[in-house]
Amino acid sequence: MPAAYLTTSWDDGHPLDGKLAEMLARYDMPATFYIPCRWARPVLAPKAIRDLASRFEIGAHTISHPDLGRSTHARALSEIVDSKRYIEDITGVSCNVFAPPRGSFRRSHLAMVREAGYTGMRTVELMNIGHPVRDSGVAILPTTLQVYRHQPSIYVRNAAKRMRPANLLTYLAHAHRRTLEGATESLIARIAGNGGVFHLWGHSWEIEERGLWPALETILASLRASRCRLVSNGALSRLIQNEHFARPVQNPELS
Image (cartoon, rainbow, N blue to C red; front, side, top):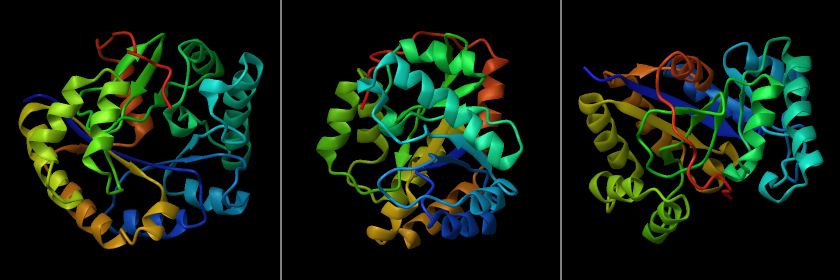
């Protein structure tokens, strides 16, 4: 049977990540939390990050949450390298995965990510269910479903900007006119039967603002009941690094 994986990741390190972590723990759900040092919204204090790291993987999310796609070479390098050091100094464990804010990066940043010592980089897509691939020595992890109710036009624009027509077809087949919960069930059934990766992601502060905690709980119950293998982003990166998947990233300058 083709390999089928489920993974989740959560951005920005908001204090509400504590509430999110409790929900994930109830479902014994692997997760990777990408945490910046600082930005416009509140961020977890070092002690809270250490507590979170005792149960979940912590990934780097830059120091100050900039748009790396519009940053100078020097600033991008500093944000990528220093954020790894920041997380490792707090948690005392190796930080192996990185996520650029808003999924924005340039191809030149892949070498920075590799040289900094990361094994994987999580990007932002909507409705990508393919296996991650290696590019420039880094496992590239796209996303599938955000815990957010986007308008249909957003899925069209996202697929066009990233030059991923397959993502739009996946949306039309499994998510169009469905709730987040319904889309999850349809996508999981597709992946369990045909292989691929379901990558759930979001922001705890956004889930709170949009009142999506009940929807998330239903989604997590569906993930836990699936026949797919549940892994963290770091574990998925290691699996991909040991496989033969390899192709260049299309249109890597994303935002």
